Length: 267
Image (tube, rainbow, N blue to C red; front, top):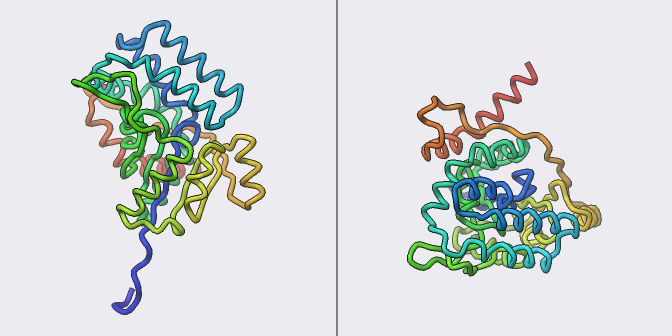
């Protein structure tokens, strides 16, 4: 670029997490480890499974998502935040890694190679979303915050990052970081994320529900099929299993792992 040419607009890629980047709900993915770690009760485990099964059966809309969240958030009242973070870090390999879509890993690598920031935007709790975003190599995450007092969750929500609030969060971040939203990308599976998709110049529907598929077809948006899981973390020596440092390694090598697997299939 010559000195007289304007700088290219700074852009970003915004990814929904549940059933977009990973093939399941992150809350469900971590429910079993939280139960095994002595935090979630058996009744809470069953309530979590039931709430998400009902959500899948009844379809996604803002009200249904709110009902699921309202049923689950009180379960965390009294939990120590640091203990939750320990369980999540230890469970990344077994609870999340097998369900990460290879196609999402590819897109993250491509956006980063193009100089775009990658942001995971999710209605799930930040303490679940943040480590998964780091695993993927995302630059940051924006997720629902839970109220904390004296190092423990109160069972109340700080800010829901869901539906229209996702779009507001994207716009706030764009204003803060100088992103040109017209040059930015967004990916989601759900019609509840229409406000976020509409906020950018390049919206994409990923494994969309019926409502989002219909909207994407009407508006000419790309519809992507994410199907293949990919391991992101190198297999460690026994003493390194569960090490927090593995998250950083996974974040740094996610794109390289995907590329190596692709080369292997082509060879």
